[in-house]
Length: 289
Ligand SMILES: Nc1ncnc2c1ncn2[C@@H]1O[C@H](COP(=O)(O)OP(=O)(O)O)[C@@H](O)[C@H]1O
Ligand SMILES: [Mg+2]
Image 1 (tube, rainbow, N blue to C red):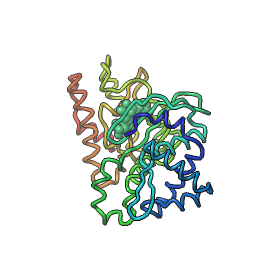
Image 2 (image 1 turned 60 degrees about the vertical axis):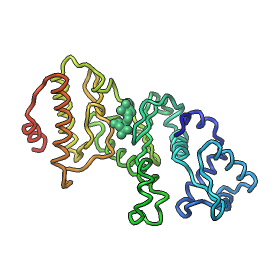
Image 3 (image 1 turned 180 degrees about the vertical axis):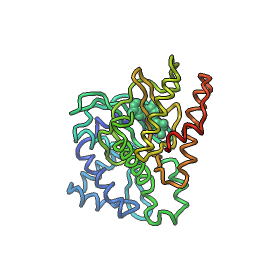
Image 4 (image 1 turned 60 degrees about the horizontal axis):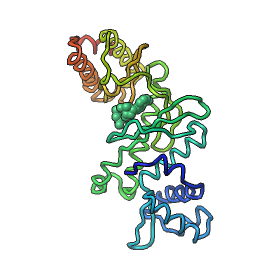
């Protein structure tokens, strides 16, 4: 994993971006993209392409294979740069800031907005990355395109999360969706702090507020499915719920069970930390009717 994506991002030239796009594009057709295809796509001369490829490989953005023929593929980090570049070009981001969250399935950066003059959050999905090696053995599920599986998984998750935010905002307290590209999302920064890292003065009021948001989301056809004190932010005005890529619809066969689990996570937390007891059956009835 590269530690210095923001730095590398600043040092990448337009021509290097063009070569990355060429490889990304041609990976649809080749497991390892031959150098000729990169030359054709970019219309740079071969010597220049070779020079750029060696720089990119040195920066660990692309991988080179020389077994059958000389070919290239991009690493996840190059995909990050391509998404970031799209956000900058479209004017939604003008400077990348600190990394504020690095989980198994995402990398989250602060950034300053461009045309929208405020701080934003960039979430880069990582879904396929960990399972990439397992997926390789499951040939039948992705067939000939298995070398693209990580890219698809991360892109699908980002699209799904973005769709959820669009469906929910502003009726439900969630970050405002601003843009999405590839496996990345730009959204507003959640106000306040993570519930897990706060001591609430009025926990009953906040619990009611969180349950109200869950009900509104349900009414809009969305069940979170990964709700916990880490995915809820609290601020003086209320709460904000983040991290939606695994949502399901109320028509899903396991909807009741997963809604129950979400609410149970929240109730158990308030019980553990604030000794608040609520009847889960009553709450669920109130949500689904
Ligand atoms: N919109 C946001 N505003 C503020 N912080 C955020 C936002 N989105 C994500 N984060 C931070 O990044 C962390 C990881 O993001 P999250 O969406 O929960 O992904 P995951 O937990 O699946 O890796 C969060 O716990 C939170 O600290
Ligand atoms: Mg989370």
